[in-house]
Length: 488
Ligand code: AMP
Ligand code: ZN
Image 1 (tube, rainbow, N blue to C red):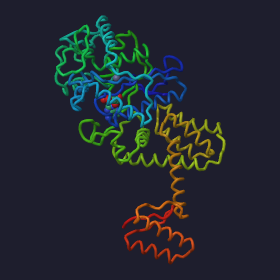
Image 2: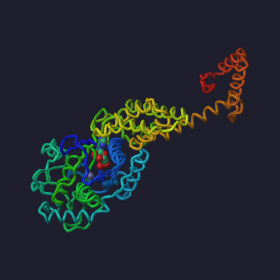
Image 3: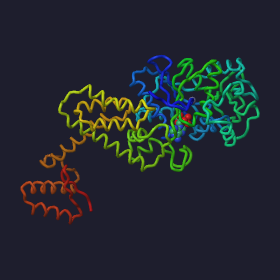
Image 4: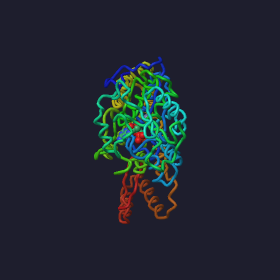
């Protein structure tokens, strides 16, 4: 598989450290609020990568943190802890909102068929480990204490800006956005490993440490959780593109300083979902959550399909019009699968043909996870000359990676259609239950009379009934499923 690596800015042939095994780390959510659909785009695309590696035969161990302390509003070392801000907003404690929004996050993931990583670690459960690694960094001369805080000394590294494309300029910008320059830092790029002199007195969670009571920085959390659970050599680290700097740059700095060798081979970043106005935000504009989309009638699978239609390394613009188009395509796709099911015919799966169909699918995903071409391969399979059983086997196979619920939703669609036609047939036979509402029942009885008249070819009577109903403000429409009425 060719997989783009932000470290080299190239698509490289993916080879894990240990044959057949992949160690993968994902930056988890900061649980101070619901995830917005931009965050969820990142988790969906990471899920496709995880699933495709498994589909390709790798045994994947995937670890994710839950950031419930230390992520400041600026992404750097200024601003307030997002969790404290969230707790104040909700009039709850930090741990209460952490639990609430962690559960909400995994509920969204379940709806979107995002696999739960094998290991999930809330940062607050790992503080001893953070302290241990920070102590080692101080001992090795990579960290220093100043003004009560512990900082990482970036001047001790041969190269700090590992993902070129980020530079001092970006950092200067971060500082401008933030509260001010931290006078304790020896170098502009240095970052906090442990805070004790928080400017914010209401920091709720604090722990004792060799440097005084305080709390960890956000970056050290991911390094420690990854190293503790996945060892010294990581194959893939992923996150949204905004995490590349400073978060991932700092993760690399401290992990490699601690280990004394290269840490992670592939850095995979998902580009952003934006609104036409720009950056997606939890605080301004419409706060786009999965629940909001559901309340507007979209299904989580339609949103997943929307994401899969475009490449993870391209920015994606969210509009309801774009989502409408994706939702319509998704429903059409499910309809096609349902039609193949109805063809049935009891044919046997032609394994050779199925393999050929899968080849196009694999080629697409082997090319830096091209999900939109993978969908094209899926359409190709449905259009192919294969028999129904082979087509369905291909759909089920591809859906191990796409996770669009195609077989399940097609079965549901067929069941619903069967029920509807049974009801229509029942109505035509006069055996269906009439409404309990006397007014509606009168209309239904007249419709039945008209259907019977039409069967007898007594069109004069049928037209008379229709005209009579129209005078009462009831219009009839004949559809393949039977006659339906509406008020005019
Ligand atoms: P957070 O909960 O803020 O720590 O972010 C969770 C994940 O969402 C991280 O991997 C971010 O990089 C990613 N992310 C943040 N904003 C967006 C966006 N607009 N589109 C896609 N991913 C995003
Ligand atoms: Zn992280």
